[in-house]
Amino acid sequence: MSNELDDYILQHIDEEPDYLYRLYRATNIHMLHGRMASGHLQGRLLKMLVRMIRPKNILEVGTFSGYSALCMAEGLESDGHLYTFEINDEQEDFTRPWIEQSPVADKITFIIGDAIEEAPKLNIAFDMAFIDGDKRTYRETYEMVMQVLRPGGFMVADNTLWDGHVIDPAYNSDHQTAGIEEFNDYVAHDSRVEKVIIPLRDGLTLIRKKE
Image 1 (cartoon, rainbow, N blue to C red):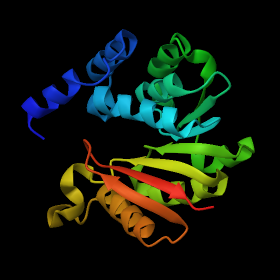
Image 2 (cartoon, rainbow, N blue to C red; image 1 turned 180 degrees about the vertical axis):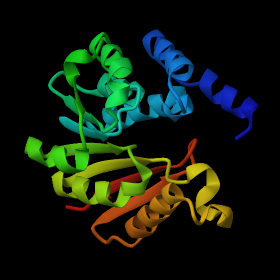
Image 3 (tube, rainbow, N blue to C red; image 1 turned 120 degrees about the vertical axis):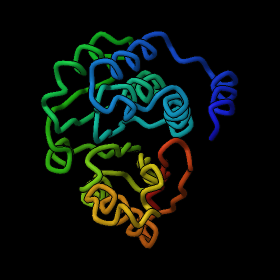
């Protein structure tokens, strides 16, 4: 997408809230790989998806700076809640204050730990999940989410085109690219779900668990 077209889109969608603008800016200043944060367009899409699905409980795997968690929490109804897991404890000092001081702090539980092991222990039937963690374990994360996602629930997986590396032979030996490719192939042949890939930013796969 050209920068001009990208700018046009951002001028014709809901504005990015000031708190999220400041978080995105701080993420890019203070954290490595700041562009991993969802950003304005994807953030508004995540909020819209939550509005459409109307989940009571959302599971997020991979909090990073908290941007996507805040966007999804914005879309929750008054009795909705989001549980977000971050495996890298070095990010807690940056992320936790941004979540806890946000306007939607009461709708978010931020947990440092491995979601693959810890999320099932919550004993919650989730209505929606957002996968944005370690690309090398996307398939394992997917199988965990399938266990805790209710029939008819939705899953959103980020980075599934991986800057186009999934079709570039030069990245065949890259473990993260291999993880994404394995995930994409696995989901494509999984009869338990319906799926579609949206070429937004780095690729976003929407998945529905059949009832």
